[in-house]
Image 1 (cartoon, rainbow, N blue to C red):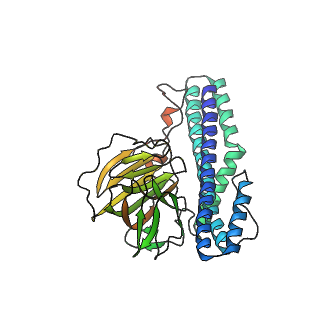
Image 2 (cartoon, one colour):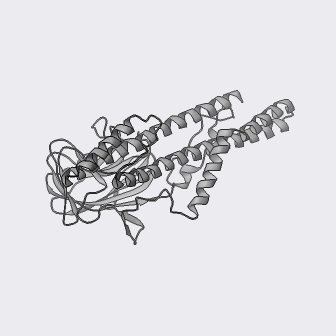
Image 3 (cartoon, one colour):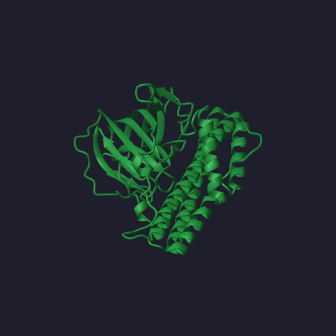
Length: 367
């Protein structure tokens, strides 16, 4: 049982660090949104607004607990704070669900062990395991997490789910997705890298420089989503999407370069360029993500799928390289339910039982 205890503690510690990184990514996303807002205010000549944004960024830099600043601001910042708070709250709830699920898995295995020891006549050992199981059931952290989850479910019954995409996006009734571009404004987006981004006739246009130019959707979209956009090359041959972006870590996909990791700038796998991609023709690119499990689809055909990416959530966006000029049309986001098989725990992999080969784990199959 001591080996199982050690594995349980290790898993909890690893999960805690994972969610610290997610909270930091959410705050980094808020910083990016503030930078984009300052650019908009600059174009409007709003000096008071710019000073308010800079003060917000200064206050944010002094906070080390993952919280957001408080105090008087301009309405635009108040709105951004509300959206960012929803994202941070959702990350906290995800962490609590992970804690409860891990504890439940461990409790289930202890119950099995208790029964096996009882059948084997090892009563003292069985009593010891039972005591450990009762102690686990009284763990204040687990009880608090379970109560918070119950409260969030009750609130969701009467309010809009905090998993929902930003309220200022436009609903597309056919498939339940959300259009991420409204009118001729790039509000809610920010550019990252070299190149020029604009809206022409309700479509996004990019004129890239030599390096990678990105246009990022300001809100983090979580782990489970479907991101779709139509792309047309006008000049050059390298344009595509960004997903699971957390700053220096994240991924881009284009039919020419394939799947590329931000930190290395190199393809993740051996990719042959998609053949037959020509200028002045619309193509559809789609990423379906469930954490580290991602499927990339180009014009209806799967071009890559895998489950070992280095990031499992983050921001989405558009990208172009090598002086490419391209158009993007109808960027859409659909928040998905977590894949059922990814939520089920593989209880056979806890150390301390015959045939075990590892620790707490998730199933990775889409099926």
